[in-house]
Image (cartoon, rainbow, N blue to C red; front, side, top):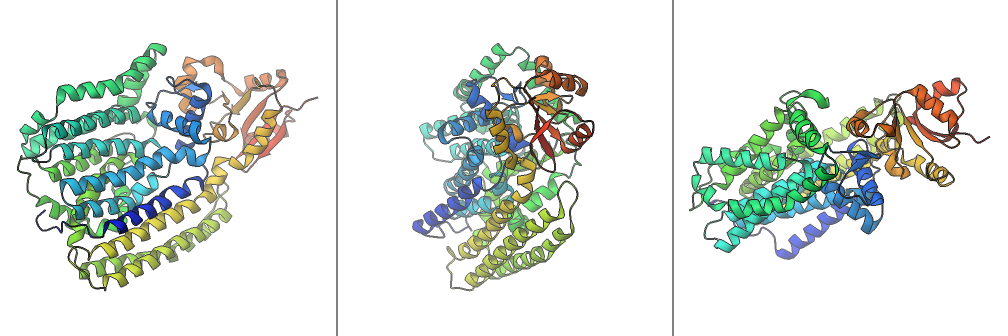
Length: 563
């Protein structure tokens, strides 16, 4: 971009301090919240079971085979448990590392493909976009997938720079192919299908057919299959049923049919992106217009066109899917941050004044709106929890307001074309980063109850007193967090939930009916069970023999009384 300031807007020491500050805000709160169902509990427990069993090929969840996703994140979480112990921050560490690395990567790519100022602002946008920083603090698959897809895109951009040596271009393309392989090992074929489709669309739209000559297809495919093949071969050898379930059921039927019961309208992801990029939303249209004026590189490659195609295609791909979750469109966040990063250095003092004033007003609205929470509540989440959470939301909005006002004050200071936009941008970014961090931490008022973690010490103490082969039943419900917190798998009773495939392969590991469980319970000398509160009340009214180990408003852990 000829009109974009090219120098770093801040000196290197200041940028290093900002990175350190971001790292502190990013990593320190990882253990401040309990794991929440279902994703966090599921993936933490899968890693715990892998670590405990020593079986690194066949993933299991609650003791049952679980082939819905590939194992890269389970491997990394299990390694984290091996190195640092089993706990909440350990379960989130890999996700947080990939999110943080994604911020540094987009900054590096922006600096190398465009200029230093673009790299700085792109990293700032991504780090402080609620969509990216919040997803970087939950143990789900989509952040790591998004990082490996980001590396795929960034390595391709870096490999196509003009005047790059053949050796450097080849190495970056090998990184690109390797990143695609790791994306496949993170969540399946979309790690290959989405970048491949984007590449085809880009070459048609930009008419850049020469790009295909610079992809190093033969050696790249060797790199790809060398990384991705071993696990698929080994797991299929050990589990002949794997291929059909993983590729046909999970990779294709999941997308093409509503079988997963995760429906949503075509516009489902529109509010996700609007809220997810809220602090930069008011410059999004100008950023796209500015990006569309970008000239092609001397070799004919058009990086901005590729990023726009990437963002639009992936957004439409998941919008058309029958299965939708908030995090599915996360892979488009890095290129969008880079597109916004191209424009931010050009904003004038007057533009920043309007921008910051608007977000200061929004923070005030959030403070006032937080009091609505004091009127909400139901039997599952009592009003007292909402009242406690309201304090966190109010505090988060207040901190955001103060940081935004500091940005307004800094915007009045003397500035140069290179450094002028950095101070208000950093202040606004800090405002939203702190808002998301504080409010996200406060959400643990709900997470504590949903996790059941306070019950775990009593349950683990009871388990320690019983024989190792004592059965632990989960009656009529799959509790996604309790197995992790009590460090023990459970035998499913009556329901299969998402463990239907694993149960069908090992039916001896479950109890089909409540009546059969009741008979087993009476026949066993030792036994434990997790019951929903309403079922416990029914059984207690019937005089069913059980002794409470621990309970909360949602679940009751019981053991068979010893005569």
